[in-house]
Image (cartoon, rainbow, N blue to C red; front, top):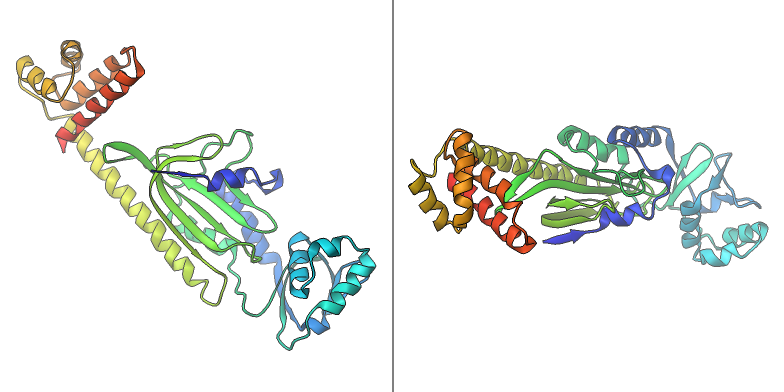
Length: 338
């Protein structure tokens, strides 16, 4: 089983203004960004870098954020660190003289008076809102995990450069190879080219307050670059989430059926038969008598009543190692109802 730290890494690199209380709040933010942002196409030689490092485009003046400034330096083939050591006037002149001339236009994504990103023609944008629409449609019952140790971070983030969501189904617990797991997934995207669009689904046993996912199994990952066919990735992400949900429903239904049978099927018609069966399953004789007395008061020697009674009694075992081994044997009794 794997330990997944993607959400943990996001937790410690995000600022408070990038954190969202709920999926709905994150979705509203992404929809607003999509609605208010605008693509503008301009030839590199028509882009004017002013003396204070703003860009003139189509008669309007725009400021750069950290990411679009980084992209512009990369296009000019000049180190961002070098530009940052120059005066604004000198830096503007350096960028103006090093930006390539081409008939192929640049793609500028603007929001109000800011430039969010600068790309060439090969880049294809996928809006965060479109990705979250898929989640809202097919996985609306998935929610963020418990808040992190800072009391603020929920696993839902969106900043200038990218979006990340950590969602689980807290009611989706099911049995896999005799142990309890619940489904969850990480989802990410960048509207400005900072990272791929992708998803990682998994079944987990525990999420700690540092948002580390412990004992994950059946981990599935998919990602796609923002090229011409990036929107096809939405169909694959939808399929992956639907498969996770299909398995959840199938396993949960199977678990419910096992529990239903366990509540009605008996291990034996009398105390001797029950004792013999429990001994054959490795249950200590010292617990069997007390467990049968508790089960008798609950209505009989059904598998469920005996498992419930034995589980209560096992908590009184002194040593943790012995208690853990005994709990495993008790849990395996439910398999008798399959």
